[in-house]
Amino acid sequence: MKTLSNFIGGEYCPPISGKYLDSFNPSTGKVHCLVPDSDNADVERAVASAHTAFAKWRKTTRKQRAAILNRVADLLEERIDEFALAESQDQGKPLSLAKDIEMPRAIDNFRFFAACLLNQGAHAYEMDGEGINYTNRLPVGVTGLISPWNLPLYLITWKIAPSLAVGNTAVCKPSELTSLTAYMLAEVLNEAGVPPGVCNIVLGTGAKAGAALTAHEKVPLISFTGGTATASSIASTAAPLFKKVGLELGGKNPNIIFADADFDKCIPTTVRSSFQNQGEICLCGSRILVEESVYDIFVERFLVAVKDFKVGDPLNEGTNMGALVSAEHLNKVRSYIQMAVDSGGKVLCGGDSPKLDGELQGGYFLNPTVVTGLNDDCRVLQEEIFGPVVTISTFKTMDEAIAKANNVRYGLSASIWTQDISKAHRTAQQLDTATVWINTWMRRDLRVPFGGMKDSGLGREGGEFSLDFYSELKNICVHF
Image 1 (spheres, rainbow, N blue to C red):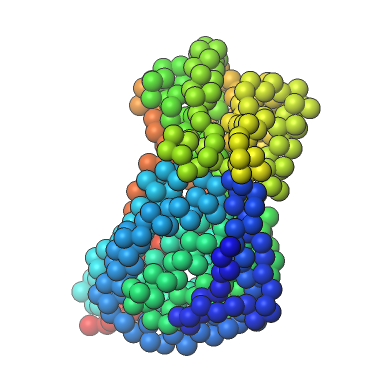
Image 2 (cartoon, rainbow, N blue to C red; image 1 turned 30 degrees about the vertical axis):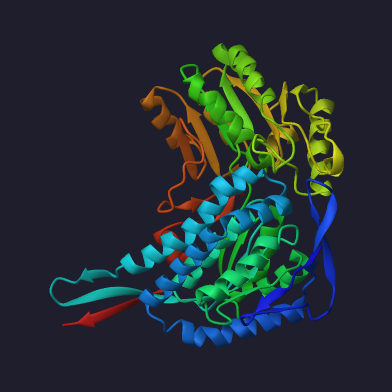
């Protein structure tokens, strides 16, 4: 069993209180490491370290910072197998998913923002020959970066890389459920030459460490990825302090399947969008809306594909879906399945746990679950479940599909499947979501804005949008 430490001022250090939390391997249900139960004292120490380091880090050149970020990426790449295994054991996801998709994306975050840094320019505006305005980006200071448990390393690096790139320092608070790869990242940061105090990592709960970080008067920026309820609390704390706040929250994302969809492409991608990472991705398509004329054939083919989706040992190469992150979360997801049954829904497959042997018998596994026959206002169709549960409903017209898709308080993403590109564009324009994929899902381009509408978040990150968020923009006017 490993005992983790905070990382403050370039050194690993235990929590000041000496208290720790149990962290479980979701595949076995057994404790596999101890995580610091950090509190205000640890956050205070980390912020002080970051504040001191900011004075020097902000004066480094873009070339110097880019070189360090690229070195972080190189070192992560050298240890990709080690990090992928740790991520799988800590979160429950298949090892193949961690190694082939999520670790490379974490590495790409550092390389991308290093490149952005070297290629950014200032905006200039001439005033009819009488003068010129030019705009610079300045670092904000100490940034508070709070990341979730579903994509641990990928999402914390999505925040660290742009924050450090523009000259900020950081105090990071990963989820207490999945702290292992953030703890390991600290060693990489040191080896890459990130100066002491520039990036600090405080482990612990949101109620203690996260709340202390959010409320700290010397932390002028908070970037949070997680649940809507927690985001509301963060916004309430940050608003009177005039902090910059970015909130990337949940989703109840529709997959709209028109009758002319290419089912050979649509079916496997929709299965993946429903159940990848055990459905524990904010972008998962949890509501499938199918045009009535092809509903029966879609359901038939979809169920065949779902039943081929293998649930089991995350370390086995053929596993498509691992364990949910915790016993509490498993029980929450099961409660929604029961709610669906109580509301008159029909469970076409899943709803139970696979029969596994050995240590895996104690793991938090659940078979992919498909539910039909629910009303649009049912809580199962309205609330984010964040697990391997999808609903299938019908629509008759494009307008009805759009109305059903928009009939939730979330607005993160949507997928549209049709071979009529005109219909695809018309539908996409009317969806109240910040991201729309047409005939695909989860295609990633780090240059585009990412965020959510309605209860799915506040602000945008990605490419220039991240650089703007992690900066203060200063305009300088020169009169000729």
